[in-house]
Image (cartoon, helix red, strand yellow):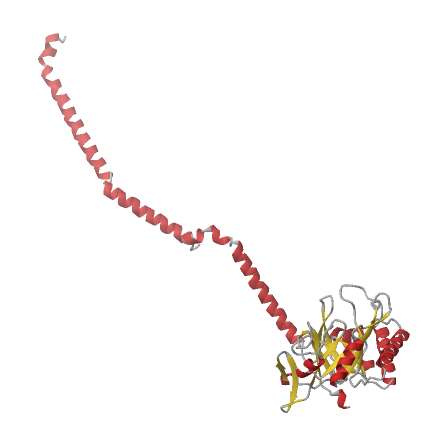
Length: 360
């Protein structure tokens, strides 16, 4: 049987055991600390690792990007300001107009002529190869103080004229003759475009007397609104009656036109009817021994009448352009309605004749 004192005698062994355990635990803690210290990176190493990782990430992102730069992300550039849009639209419009112009030029050649109608619409008309065409070379036109002259072989072969009506109240015929005016076309009268009544031009007799006083050659014209051949003959007889014993050396012209900004009584006439009315007037004029002439612009001559049936008569072309492009033969050209000549108050129509009718 073990006694208490026996225990006390062996009590010196227990502290040794505890000491051994303590040393072992201490050694173990040192080992753990060493291992932990080896695994934990330094702050410098950590920063370098983070930077390297960021660079790798940026490289990966750039490999998947579309190549855009910061300025490409400026969304305002995707929506031009209004001025830029207008400029682009204007540039596009100019390009379209140039293209259209080029196309029109390619269509307008010696086989076609363009007609602009009074409503602004246009039509390209084929030139009849069998009709007699003019042979004027308009590079021979010379302008002197806005007065045109035509030359051939260095010699002037044209004659300058004015056409006068009640709208030219004061005309000094000696002065305009000194300015180079060779002849005048006087309006005898007109038929009302609504009432149909023939009316005398209130300045006709005064103009005729003034021209005769200086020996200026005279031609006549009548503004017609006849709707029948009988009315056309009536107009021609009226003109003849007003001539009396006066000498008329230039033609007597038939002038039928539409009315600007109003409806004329000739609006409903067909092309054939207008042609026959013109024929009736001009035939009567020539029966009386005078030279008949047809006045008109391109629209009228090419579309409103059948010019082929009127080829016997001389043409007085009205076209306010630097160079006329009417293809067929004409002997007189009204080139402006806003001419200015010393001796005439206000504007006056100016004409160039390629024939000296007074010498016939």
